[in-house]
Image (tube, rainbow, N blue to C red; front, top):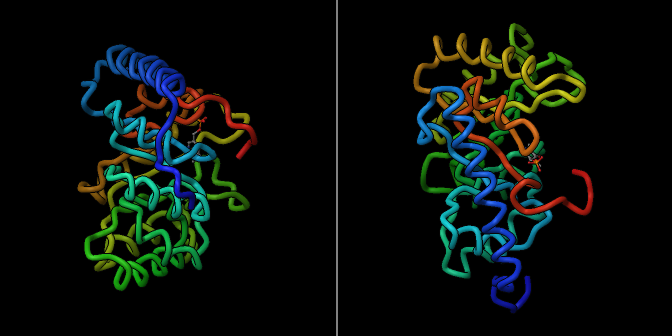
Length: 248
Ligand SMILES: *Cc1c(COP(=O)(O)O)cnc(C)c1O
């Protein structure tokens, strides 16, 4: 933590405003092309690797939702933003280890990356003591079904990683709400093919969980395709804030 207030220079603010205008136009155009109402799609600004001052500046430009993928970075950043008197809705979008659940439930409003029953239980236990309101959760879905990577497995009876098992664990947890699904297009897949498959999984999922209406999909490179296939939340980092110095 620094003693510097979380602020940015005017040129950075102008850069963020320009990035935001471009991304908002892309989202509006994608909604129009898909015949969807613009109000159906929420943009989450993915601020990983960028400082709290950028979050404060984005909030000043009307951004309400912020995404982070590492607890070590997100926890102090959320504290700094709160200390600046700014309220943001924090989305935890990265792979989450169970031993980080206690920290994440203190600042996150939504956790997008629940992909095992064991993680669902750890989050519920942490939420019971670490917060006073329900934590929204999404099941992260594996689009290619590769168990070696992140994501719950559709059409699998695996007791820990099966999509329906994870969903039931979240839906039955007192401190958690099952709000929907999240996915990342697998490397090497055409976004169209990835999000078409995701849309099928999401449709079947909603037949069983009609209240779970969130579909978090699409990033800087593929938000148009995700919106065409029903995304309600797009997670946008580099197109908004600039290229990150390191790949994450
Ligand atoms: C970093 C990240 C994003 C944003 O990626 P960009 O390509 O910079 O828009 C979205 N979702 C997840 C899970 C991420 O880790």
